[in-house]
Image 1: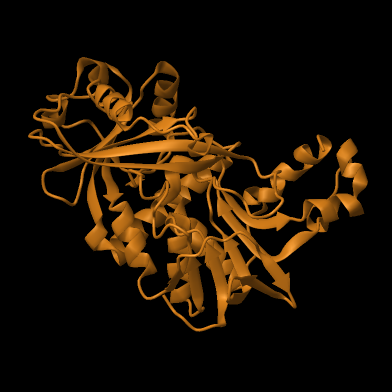
Image 2 (image 1 turned 30 degrees about the vertical axis):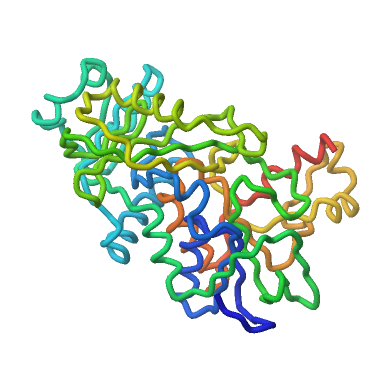
Length: 379
């Protein structure tokens, strides 16, 4: 960690999960001087616990599908080109886990441009009857990355500070965090405390649990069904996860039951195939951050108090052009990727770089300000 008393940067990034690390890497590659800040270390939260599957999102036509499609293509190119050591390319089999999702799968198969084919016979032979009888799509190319390994590699060479940030100061066009200074500040802190009065940001915390196991069963492809099951870069190690537990919160004070979480993962995996001679090697847990409307967030943050003071009638439903809102200066948030953080990160980081370096406007559809009008009417 650098030790100079006052350190000047172009950008400070708070949060060293996949969004923070990928943004730091991309901005540094473009020539900016970047500092990365996280109180607990690189990929210490939800990103470190992620399955880190580079999979397309099975969804119907709409804004989300277009963005996820572009992000998936970007992610495959990004990881295989820049971090091949931490990227395992394998076919991907997505199996619907209920009839409603089955309808999405069938629709997606009809509309997608991604190359897919029939499930090879050798894979059919080890699938359960439930898996075989459900709608599915077999992609010729999928990938899984080493979550902690790739985040650490992205942060290599970038100044990292293990600081617990409790206060943000903006003065004379400069953001200050501890003894660090920069013109631009990027918040990529997921579902953890937001550091600013931005309660309008529509986030939901999702607890994730992944286990690495040893098994004598050979897994020839990445499987998504009730849970995700995948080979890894470690010989003989299979990853299972991550289950979504919307009821558990690390802020509740209650301990998370690791053994129970393991049992749930293994029970759900058994609905897809039989795993023999299982030995659990390691558990990974952490809190992910999903947006309330399932679209990721990339954009500037509204200063709610200042905006409502200037436009008090927003509280009564009066429409105000979002361009007229008052925003925190030179501050950008990346958040809300949910279970697709590793798919979305290269896409969002690229858009952030285009905004900060090339001065290309951000997509307003992704702006966190989209949640502000509804929140303002209730406050």
